[in-house]
Length: 60
Image 1 (tube, rainbow, N blue to C red):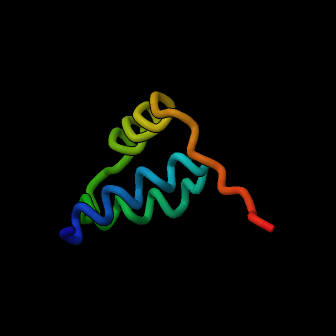
Image 2 (cartoon, helix red, strand yellow; image 1 turned 90 degrees about the vertical axis):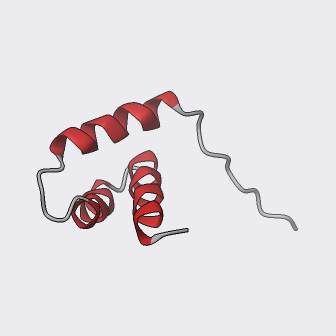
């Protein structure tokens, strides 16, 4: 996985889990300091379209 692919997936995962600060940081790095607002909005739409993340249950 390349650095760009990792940052893309990290940003999408962060958006899915409501960590907007982390998502914005990854997108700033991915977009090399350019405006990220449209990309961030698009990631939010993608995240909303995805099924809920699986919840891990603790095994006793």
